Image 1: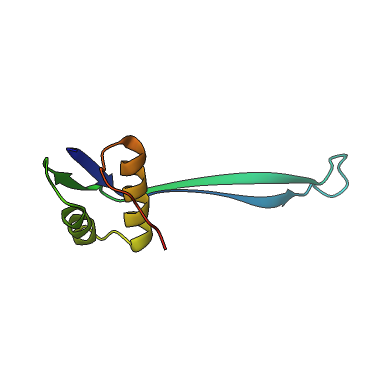
Image 2: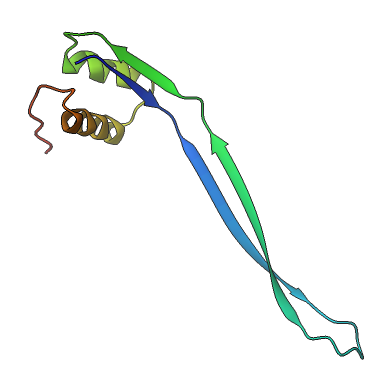
Length: 94
């Protein structure tokens, strides 16, 4: 069936660094740990493959390979298309 597939990567990295806060000498303050959270987000530009009615699985796989999909990505796409009813084929993953 007609379908458009977007392929891209989104990475969200959250790190926590613990620092120690020391009170001044001879003060009544207490030593405490202070978490410092850093968030970094990276996104690659999405790549797409558009298929017209009558496209074959070979057409799909060639398009996915052309945009840099890994074998794992290709299997996941095929499984998702099958589950959505956009792929009229049986899948046998070995």
